[in-house]
Length: 438
View 1 (tube, helix red, strand yellow):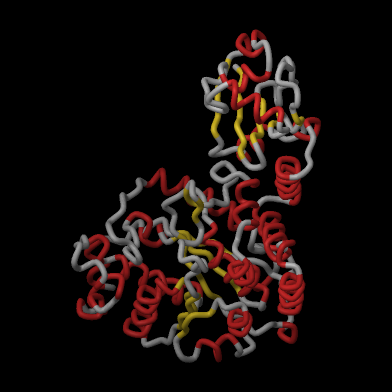
View 2 (cartoon, rainbow, N blue to C red):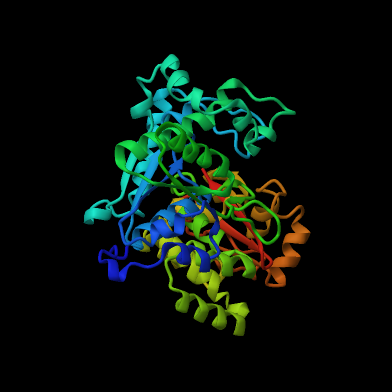
Protein backbone atom coordinates (compact mmCIF):
# COMPACT_ATOMS: atom_id res chain seq x y z
CA UNK A 1 0.00 0.00 0.00
CA UNK A 2 1.14 3.53 -0.70
CA UNK A 3 2.08 5.53 2.40
CA UNK A 4 -0.82 7.60 3.66
CA UNK A 5 -0.46 11.32 2.97
CA UNK A 6 -0.03 13.08 6.30
CA UNK A 7 0.67 16.75 5.67
CA UNK A 8 -2.17 19.06 4.82
CA UNK A 9 -0.18 20.58 1.98
CA UNK A 10 -0.04 17.18 0.30
CA UNK A 11 -3.70 16.32 0.86
CA UNK A 12 -5.59 15.59 -2.35
CA UNK A 13 -9.16 16.75 -2.87
CA UNK A 14 -11.24 13.68 -2.05
CA UNK A 15 -14.37 14.79 -3.91
CA UNK A 16 -12.37 15.65 -7.02
CA UNK A 17 -10.62 12.28 -6.78
CA UNK A 18 -13.94 10.45 -6.81
CA UNK A 19 -15.34 12.74 -9.50
CA UNK A 20 -12.63 12.12 -12.12
CA UNK A 21 -12.74 8.40 -11.38
CA UNK A 22 -16.47 8.40 -12.15
CA UNK A 23 -17.36 7.24 -8.64
CA UNK A 24 -19.18 10.25 -7.17
CA UNK A 25 -22.99 10.03 -7.19
CA UNK A 26 -24.41 12.52 -4.68
CA UNK A 27 -23.69 14.39 -1.46
CA UNK A 28 -25.58 16.71 0.86
CA UNK A 29 -24.75 20.43 0.67
CA UNK A 30 -21.67 21.36 2.64
CA UNK A 31 -19.93 18.00 2.32
CA UNK A 32 -17.23 19.22 -0.06
CA UNK A 33 -16.58 22.29 2.08
CA UNK A 34 -16.21 20.05 5.14
CA UNK A 35 -13.66 17.87 3.40
CA UNK A 36 -11.68 20.87 2.17
CA UNK A 37 -11.62 22.61 5.56
CA UNK A 38 -8.03 21.53 6.25
CA UNK A 39 -9.06 19.22 9.10
CA UNK A 40 -8.71 15.45 9.21
CA UNK A 41 -12.32 14.35 8.79
CA UNK A 42 -13.66 11.03 10.05
CA UNK A 43 -16.07 9.09 7.83
CA UNK A 44 -17.50 5.62 7.88
CA UNK A 45 -19.00 3.04 5.54
CA UNK A 46 -21.06 0.06 6.68
CA UNK A 47 -20.42 -3.49 5.48
CA UNK A 48 -23.01 -6.26 5.43
CA UNK A 49 -21.85 -9.30 7.44
CA UNK A 50 -24.21 -11.87 5.91
CA UNK A 51 -21.31 -13.72 4.23
CA UNK A 52 -17.88 -14.69 5.56
CA UNK A 53 -16.17 -12.90 2.70
CA UNK A 54 -16.48 -9.58 0.93
CA UNK A 55 -17.21 -9.79 -2.78
CA UNK A 56 -15.89 -7.66 -5.63
CA UNK A 57 -19.10 -5.63 -5.35
CA UNK A 58 -17.89 -4.45 -1.93
CA UNK A 59 -14.62 -3.26 -3.46
CA UNK A 60 -16.21 0.02 -4.57
CA UNK A 61 -16.74 0.98 -0.94
CA UNK A 62 -13.37 -0.42 0.14
CA UNK A 63 -11.67 1.69 -2.54
CA UNK A 64 -13.71 4.72 -1.41
CA UNK A 65 -12.26 4.31 2.08
CA UNK A 66 -8.75 3.85 0.62
CA UNK A 67 -9.01 7.07 -1.37
CA UNK A 68 -10.42 8.81 1.70
CA UNK A 69 -7.36 7.76 3.71
CA UNK A 70 -4.93 8.63 0.94
CA UNK A 71 -6.48 12.10 0.84
CA UNK A 72 -5.42 12.55 4.46
CA UNK A 73 -8.67 11.68 6.26
CA UNK A 74 -9.59 8.96 8.76
CA UNK A 75 -11.63 6.00 7.43
CA UNK A 76 -13.89 3.89 9.63
CA UNK A 77 -15.27 0.53 8.49
CA UNK A 78 -18.45 -0.36 10.34
CA UNK A 79 -19.20 -4.08 10.36
CA UNK A 80 -22.88 -4.54 11.05
CA UNK A 81 -23.13 -7.13 13.79
CA UNK A 82 -26.47 -5.60 14.83
CA UNK A 83 -27.87 -4.56 11.45
CA UNK A 84 -26.88 -7.98 10.09
CA UNK A 85 -29.45 -9.46 12.47
CA UNK A 86 -32.18 -7.35 10.87
CA UNK A 87 -31.41 -7.27 7.15
CA UNK A 88 -31.24 -4.23 4.87
CA UNK A 89 -34.28 -4.07 2.54
CA UNK A 90 -32.52 -1.71 0.10
CA UNK A 91 -32.53 -3.26 -3.37
CA UNK A 92 -34.08 -6.50 -2.08
CA UNK A 93 -37.30 -8.01 -3.45
CA UNK A 94 -37.86 -10.24 -0.46
CA UNK A 95 -36.81 -10.59 3.15
CA UNK A 96 -33.67 -12.63 3.72
CA UNK A 97 -32.94 -15.21 6.36
CA UNK A 98 -31.55 -13.81 9.61
CA UNK A 99 -28.25 -15.13 10.98
CA UNK A 100 -27.48 -16.24 14.50
CA UNK A 101 -24.86 -14.52 16.65
CA UNK A 102 -22.16 -17.18 16.14
CA UNK A 103 -22.51 -17.10 12.35
CA UNK A 104 -22.39 -13.32 12.32
CA UNK A 105 -19.26 -13.27 14.48
CA UNK A 106 -17.51 -15.71 12.16
CA UNK A 107 -18.42 -13.55 9.16
CA UNK A 108 -17.26 -10.38 10.92
CA UNK A 109 -13.87 -11.88 11.80
CA UNK A 110 -13.36 -13.02 8.20
CA UNK A 111 -14.28 -9.65 6.72
CA UNK A 112 -12.08 -7.83 9.21
CA UNK A 113 -9.02 -9.73 7.93
CA UNK A 114 -9.87 -8.78 4.37
CA UNK A 115 -10.32 -5.09 5.17
CA UNK A 116 -6.91 -5.04 6.84
CA UNK A 117 -5.34 -5.77 3.42
CA UNK A 118 -6.59 -2.45 2.08
CA UNK A 119 -6.54 0.08 4.89
CA UNK A 120 -3.62 1.29 6.98
CA UNK A 121 -4.41 0.79 10.67
CA UNK A 122 -1.14 2.21 11.97
CA UNK A 123 -0.30 5.56 10.40
CA UNK A 124 -0.99 8.13 13.06
CA UNK A 125 -3.91 10.53 13.13
CA UNK A 126 -5.64 9.09 10.09
CA UNK A 127 -5.23 5.41 10.96
CA UNK A 128 -8.21 3.33 9.90
CA UNK A 129 -10.53 1.79 12.48
CA UNK A 130 -13.10 -1.00 12.47
CA UNK A 131 -16.20 -0.72 14.64
CA UNK A 132 -19.09 -3.14 15.22
CA UNK A 133 -22.54 -1.71 15.83
CA UNK A 134 -23.45 -4.73 17.95
CA UNK A 135 -21.23 -3.19 20.62
CA UNK A 136 -23.66 -0.31 21.22
CA UNK A 137 -26.89 -2.17 20.41
CA UNK A 138 -26.43 -5.36 22.48
CA UNK A 139 -27.73 -3.73 25.69
CA UNK A 140 -30.11 -1.23 24.07
CA UNK A 141 -33.61 -2.36 25.09
CA UNK A 142 -36.56 -2.17 22.74
CA UNK A 143 -38.42 0.29 24.98
CA UNK A 144 -35.36 2.55 25.22
CA UNK A 145 -34.93 2.44 21.46
CA UNK A 146 -38.48 3.42 20.57
CA UNK A 147 -38.43 6.18 23.23
CA UNK A 148 -35.00 7.62 22.41
CA UNK A 149 -34.89 7.05 18.64
CA UNK A 150 -38.32 6.16 17.25
CA UNK A 151 -40.03 9.33 18.47
CA UNK A 152 -37.71 11.53 16.41
CA UNK A 153 -38.48 10.02 12.98
CA UNK A 154 -42.06 10.00 11.70
CA UNK A 155 -43.68 7.07 9.91
CA UNK A 156 -44.39 9.38 6.96
CA UNK A 157 -40.67 10.15 6.68
CA UNK A 158 -39.79 6.43 6.78
CA UNK A 159 -42.50 5.54 4.21
CA UNK A 160 -41.10 8.08 1.76
CA UNK A 161 -37.84 6.13 1.36
CA UNK A 162 -37.42 4.14 -1.86
CA UNK A 163 -36.24 1.10 0.10
CA UNK A 164 -39.70 1.03 1.73
CA UNK A 165 -41.87 2.19 -1.18
CA UNK A 166 -40.41 -0.44 -3.51
CA UNK A 167 -41.46 -3.20 -1.13
CA UNK A 168 -45.01 -2.09 -0.27
CA UNK A 169 -46.62 -4.27 -2.94
CA UNK A 170 -44.79 -7.47 -1.96
CA UNK A 171 -44.84 -6.75 1.76
CA UNK A 172 -42.28 -5.84 4.38
CA UNK A 173 -41.92 -7.01 7.95
CA UNK A 174 -41.70 -4.60 10.86
CA UNK A 175 -38.15 -5.92 11.35
CA UNK A 176 -37.01 -4.66 7.95
CA UNK A 177 -39.07 -1.49 8.27
CA UNK A 178 -37.04 -0.52 11.33
CA UNK A 179 -33.70 -1.07 9.57
CA UNK A 180 -33.30 2.57 8.57
CA UNK A 181 -33.80 3.64 12.20
CA UNK A 182 -31.07 1.28 13.35
CA UNK A 183 -28.66 2.47 10.67
CA UNK A 184 -29.66 6.05 11.43
CA UNK A 185 -28.84 5.53 15.09
CA UNK A 186 -25.39 4.20 14.10
CA UNK A 187 -24.62 7.60 12.61
CA UNK A 188 -26.00 9.40 15.66
CA UNK A 189 -23.92 7.25 18.01
CA UNK A 190 -20.71 7.60 15.98
CA UNK A 191 -21.24 11.34 15.59
CA UNK A 192 -21.48 11.79 19.37
CA UNK A 193 -19.02 9.17 20.59
CA UNK A 194 -16.32 9.31 17.90
CA UNK A 195 -16.80 12.67 16.19
CA UNK A 196 -17.65 11.09 12.84
CA UNK A 197 -19.36 13.73 10.69
CA UNK A 198 -19.68 11.89 7.38
CA UNK A 199 -21.28 8.63 6.28
CA UNK A 200 -20.59 7.23 2.81
CA UNK A 201 -22.01 4.33 0.82
CA UNK A 202 -23.50 3.20 -2.47
CA UNK A 203 -26.29 5.23 -4.04
CA UNK A 204 -28.83 2.61 -2.92
CA UNK A 205 -27.99 3.60 0.67
CA UNK A 206 -28.95 7.27 0.27
CA UNK A 207 -32.24 6.87 2.13
CA UNK A 208 -30.67 5.06 5.08
CA UNK A 209 -27.75 7.50 5.27
CA UNK A 210 -29.94 10.61 5.19
CA UNK A 211 -32.12 9.12 7.93
CA UNK A 212 -28.91 9.22 9.98
CA UNK A 213 -28.19 12.85 9.15
CA UNK A 214 -31.78 13.69 10.04
CA UNK A 215 -31.55 11.89 13.38
CA UNK A 216 -28.33 13.74 14.21
CA UNK A 217 -30.13 17.01 13.48
CA UNK A 218 -33.36 16.20 15.33
CA UNK A 219 -31.83 14.64 18.47
CA UNK A 220 -28.93 17.01 18.96
CA UNK A 221 -29.41 19.95 16.64
CA UNK A 222 -26.12 19.10 14.87
CA UNK A 223 -25.17 18.92 11.21
CA UNK A 224 -23.97 15.66 9.68
CA UNK A 225 -23.05 14.90 6.08
CA UNK A 226 -23.57 12.21 3.46
CA UNK A 227 -21.83 11.13 0.26
CA UNK A 228 -22.70 8.27 -2.09
CA UNK A 229 -20.96 6.53 -4.97
CA UNK A 230 -22.43 5.12 -8.16
CA UNK A 231 -23.58 1.52 -8.27
CA UNK A 232 -21.37 -0.27 -10.79
CA UNK A 233 -23.03 -1.51 -13.94
CA UNK A 234 -21.48 -3.51 -16.76
CA UNK A 235 -21.74 -2.26 -20.31
CA UNK A 236 -23.73 -5.32 -21.42
CA UNK A 237 -26.35 -4.76 -18.75
CA UNK A 238 -25.43 -7.77 -16.62
CA UNK A 239 -24.81 -7.44 -12.89
CA UNK A 240 -21.31 -6.52 -11.82
CA UNK A 241 -19.55 -8.90 -9.44
CA UNK A 242 -21.00 -12.14 -10.76
CA UNK A 243 -19.82 -14.78 -13.20
CA UNK A 244 -21.69 -17.69 -14.74
CA UNK A 245 -20.96 -19.73 -11.63
CA UNK A 246 -21.98 -17.06 -9.11
CA UNK A 247 -20.43 -14.32 -6.97
CA UNK A 248 -16.77 -13.35 -7.25
CA UNK A 249 -15.40 -13.36 -3.69
CA UNK A 250 -12.19 -11.99 -2.16
CA UNK A 251 -11.67 -15.24 -0.23
CA UNK A 252 -9.53 -17.55 -2.36
CA UNK A 253 -11.33 -20.58 -0.94
CA UNK A 254 -14.57 -19.28 -2.45
CA UNK A 255 -13.11 -17.85 -5.67
CA UNK A 256 -9.67 -19.09 -6.68
CA UNK A 257 -7.01 -16.46 -7.49
CA UNK A 258 -6.98 -17.81 -11.06
CA UNK A 259 -10.73 -17.34 -11.46
CA UNK A 260 -10.49 -13.94 -9.76
CA UNK A 261 -7.76 -12.90 -12.21
CA UNK A 262 -9.81 -14.14 -15.18
CA UNK A 263 -12.86 -12.15 -14.03
CA UNK A 264 -10.97 -8.89 -14.52
CA UNK A 265 -9.03 -10.08 -17.58
CA UNK A 266 -12.27 -10.89 -19.40
CA UNK A 267 -13.79 -7.43 -18.89
CA UNK A 268 -15.10 -5.72 -22.00
CA UNK A 269 -13.06 -2.76 -23.25
CA UNK A 270 -15.66 -0.22 -22.08
CA UNK A 271 -15.82 -1.84 -18.64
CA UNK A 272 -12.03 -2.10 -18.31
CA UNK A 273 -11.70 1.64 -18.97
CA UNK A 274 -14.23 2.26 -16.20
CA UNK A 275 -12.98 -0.38 -13.76
CA UNK A 276 -9.32 0.64 -13.88
CA UNK A 277 -10.33 4.08 -12.56
CA UNK A 278 -12.46 2.64 -9.76
CA UNK A 279 -10.55 -0.43 -8.59
CA UNK A 280 -6.92 0.68 -8.82
CA UNK A 281 -4.91 3.51 -7.30
CA UNK A 282 -3.31 4.43 -10.61
CA UNK A 283 -3.11 8.17 -11.24
CA UNK A 284 -5.10 10.04 -13.85
CA UNK A 285 -1.98 10.42 -16.00
CA UNK A 286 -1.18 6.69 -15.75
CA UNK A 287 -4.72 5.69 -16.66
CA UNK A 288 -5.00 8.12 -19.57
CA UNK A 289 -1.70 6.79 -20.94
CA UNK A 290 -2.95 3.20 -20.65
CA UNK A 291 -6.23 4.07 -22.39
CA UNK A 292 -4.31 5.69 -25.26
CA UNK A 293 -2.00 2.67 -25.64
CA UNK A 294 -4.93 0.29 -25.44
CA UNK A 295 -6.83 2.15 -28.19
CA UNK A 296 -3.83 1.76 -30.50
CA UNK A 297 -3.64 -2.03 -30.01
CA UNK A 298 -6.92 -3.18 -28.47
CA UNK A 299 -6.23 -6.83 -29.36
CA UNK A 300 -3.39 -6.86 -26.81
CA UNK A 301 -5.93 -6.08 -24.03
CA UNK A 302 -3.48 -3.88 -22.14
CA UNK A 303 -6.18 -2.30 -19.97
CA UNK A 304 -7.55 -5.65 -18.91
CA UNK A 305 -4.10 -7.03 -18.14
CA UNK A 306 -3.11 -4.03 -16.01
CA UNK A 307 -6.46 -4.07 -14.23
CA UNK A 308 -6.30 -7.81 -13.51
CA UNK A 309 -2.70 -7.55 -12.31
CA UNK A 310 -3.31 -4.64 -9.97
CA UNK A 311 -6.45 -6.00 -8.31
CA UNK A 312 -5.25 -9.61 -8.06
CA UNK A 313 -2.00 -8.58 -6.36
CA UNK A 314 -3.83 -6.28 -3.95
CA UNK A 315 -6.49 -8.84 -2.99
CA UNK A 316 -4.28 -11.95 -3.02
CA UNK A 317 -0.53 -11.57 -3.62
CA UNK A 318 2.04 -11.16 -6.36
CA UNK A 319 2.76 -14.89 -6.14
CA UNK A 320 -0.91 -15.77 -6.69
CA UNK A 321 -1.01 -13.34 -9.61
CA UNK A 322 2.05 -14.92 -11.20
CA UNK A 323 0.53 -18.39 -10.75
CA UNK A 324 -2.66 -17.21 -12.48
CA UNK A 325 -0.69 -15.75 -15.40
CA UNK A 326 1.41 -18.91 -15.66
CA UNK A 327 -1.69 -21.09 -15.71
CA UNK A 328 -3.22 -18.99 -18.48
CA UNK A 329 -0.06 -19.11 -20.59
CA UNK A 330 0.42 -22.85 -20.13
CA UNK A 331 -3.13 -23.82 -20.94
CA UNK A 332 -4.05 -21.31 -23.58
CA UNK A 333 -0.61 -20.58 -24.99
CA UNK A 334 2.28 -22.82 -25.97
CA UNK A 335 2.61 -24.62 -22.66
CA UNK A 336 4.29 -27.99 -22.24
CA UNK A 337 3.50 -31.11 -20.28
CA UNK A 338 6.41 -30.32 -17.95
CA UNK A 339 4.96 -26.87 -17.23
CA UNK A 340 1.57 -28.41 -16.49
CA UNK A 341 3.19 -30.42 -13.72
CA UNK A 342 4.24 -27.17 -12.02
CA UNK A 343 0.64 -26.06 -11.43
CA UNK A 344 -0.79 -26.81 -8.01
CA UNK A 345 -3.96 -28.90 -7.94
CA UNK A 346 -6.15 -26.02 -6.70
CA UNK A 347 -5.15 -23.83 -9.64
CA UNK A 348 -5.50 -26.71 -12.08
CA UNK A 349 -9.04 -27.48 -10.93
CA UNK A 350 -9.92 -23.79 -10.93
CA UNK A 351 -8.77 -23.48 -14.54
CA UNK A 352 -10.92 -26.42 -15.57
CA UNK A 353 -13.95 -25.54 -13.48
CA UNK A 354 -16.97 -26.24 -15.67
CA UNK A 355 -14.98 -28.39 -18.10
CA UNK A 356 -16.42 -31.86 -18.70
CA UNK A 357 -14.76 -34.33 -16.34
CA UNK A 358 -14.54 -38.09 -16.85
CA UNK A 359 -13.52 -40.53 -14.14
CA UNK A 360 -11.78 -43.81 -14.89
CA UNK A 361 -9.80 -46.27 -12.78
CA UNK A 362 -6.06 -46.83 -13.05
CA UNK A 363 -6.82 -50.39 -14.14
CA UNK A 364 -8.86 -49.13 -17.09
CA UNK A 365 -6.04 -46.79 -18.09
CA UNK A 366 -3.40 -49.53 -17.88
CA UNK A 367 -5.58 -51.98 -19.82
CA UNK A 368 -6.34 -49.52 -22.62
CA UNK A 369 -4.69 -50.79 -25.81
CA UNK A 370 -4.53 -47.46 -27.66
CA UNK A 371 -5.37 -43.77 -27.40
CA UNK A 372 -8.36 -44.12 -29.74
CA UNK A 373 -10.07 -46.59 -27.40
CA UNK A 374 -9.25 -44.46 -24.37
CA UNK A 375 -10.82 -41.33 -25.82
CA UNK A 376 -13.97 -43.10 -27.01
CA UNK A 377 -14.85 -46.48 -25.46
CA UNK A 378 -13.07 -46.27 -22.08
CA UNK A 379 -14.36 -42.74 -21.42
CA UNK A 380 -17.97 -43.79 -22.13
CA UNK A 381 -18.19 -41.87 -25.39
CA UNK A 382 -18.04 -38.53 -23.55
CA UNK A 383 -14.95 -37.19 -25.31
CA UNK A 384 -15.59 -38.89 -28.65
CA UNK A 385 -18.87 -40.72 -29.29
CA UNK A 386 -17.15 -43.24 -31.58
CA UNK A 387 -13.73 -44.65 -32.44
CA UNK A 388 -14.18 -43.38 -35.99
CA UNK A 389 -14.53 -39.76 -34.90
CA UNK A 390 -11.57 -40.10 -32.54
CA UNK A 391 -9.37 -41.56 -35.31
CA UNK A 392 -10.35 -38.84 -37.77
CA UNK A 393 -9.51 -35.95 -35.43
CA UNK A 394 -6.28 -37.55 -34.18
CA UNK A 395 -5.05 -38.07 -37.76
CA UNK A 396 -5.91 -34.44 -38.53
CA UNK A 397 -3.70 -33.29 -35.62
CA UNK A 398 -6.60 -32.01 -33.56
CA UNK A 399 -6.03 -33.93 -30.32
CA UNK A 400 -3.53 -33.30 -27.52
CA UNK A 401 -2.96 -35.11 -24.24
CA UNK A 402 -1.25 -33.04 -21.54
CA UNK A 403 -0.31 -30.48 -24.21
CA UNK A 404 1.37 -33.16 -26.39
CA UNK A 405 -0.18 -33.52 -29.84
CA UNK A 406 -1.22 -37.09 -30.69
CA UNK A 407 -0.73 -38.27 -34.29
CA UNK A 408 -0.70 -42.07 -34.01
CA UNK A 409 -4.16 -43.61 -33.52
CA UNK A 410 -2.59 -46.82 -32.17
CA UNK A 411 -0.38 -45.08 -29.61
CA UNK A 412 -0.36 -46.74 -26.19
CA UNK A 413 -1.58 -44.28 -23.51
CA UNK A 414 1.41 -44.39 -21.15
CA UNK A 415 1.31 -40.73 -20.21
CA UNK A 416 2.58 -39.22 -16.99
CA UNK A 417 -0.43 -38.15 -14.94
CA UNK A 418 -0.63 -34.51 -13.89
CA UNK A 419 -0.45 -34.44 -10.09
CA UNK A 420 -0.56 -38.24 -10.27
CA UNK A 421 -4.25 -38.23 -11.14
CA UNK A 422 -5.21 -36.15 -14.19
CA UNK A 423 -5.01 -36.29 -17.98
CA UNK A 424 -5.86 -33.10 -19.84
CA UNK A 425 -7.40 -33.72 -23.24
CA UNK A 426 -7.63 -30.95 -25.82
CA UNK A 427 -10.01 -31.56 -28.71
CA UNK A 428 -9.67 -28.92 -31.38
CA UNK A 429 -8.67 -25.41 -30.34
CA UNK A 430 -11.04 -24.73 -27.47
CA UNK A 431 -12.60 -27.96 -26.20
CA UNK A 432 -10.99 -29.35 -23.06
CA UNK A 433 -11.75 -32.48 -21.05
CA UNK A 434 -10.34 -33.58 -17.73
CA UNK A 435 -9.82 -37.29 -17.14
CA UNK A 436 -9.42 -38.10 -13.44
CA UNK A 437 -7.74 -41.42 -12.85
CA UNK A 438 -8.68 -43.11 -9.58
